[in-house]
Length: 204
Image 1: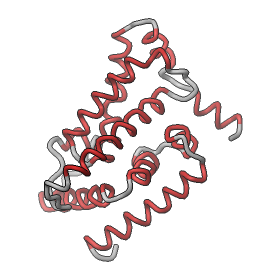
Image 2: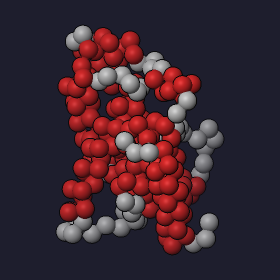
Image 3: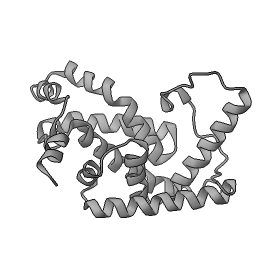
């Protein structure tokens, strides 16, 4: 990894707020919560595919971050560190959900959003028809269903790269895996989702 890339990763606009948090400033941590809550909710939701579970995961993640903020060494950005906490908690929740699936039926057609405004932060600039909105929502549900079908290791890489836009280096740091492994998992995850969508929606 070049020095320029390292410098880019470790440059953190939250550094001053984090320093205040380490000194016990609760209000400063509230600033971090407000700033990153939406993005963390999106990561958790994309990982677990359930809004209520995602909310609980994010709440637990912020509690863990608050308790562990003094041990945060700031070798990466705060958002990278927080995202890694969310990913790990999501993986734990996925394991719990897999056990529940033996007792509860699941369908790709089941609605998964209860507060769409929180998950889809960018509304359409124009006003699509009801039919267009329903079709878009159905497609999003199909995509999420295919993401849910991925192994959690592949799912994590796909969510962090293609949905959240983290760099390969950041993902490597978050998941503690080699850069080449990130790219390999991402390729396989993309292919799996593409094949899944072909099955549920036909040729794309």
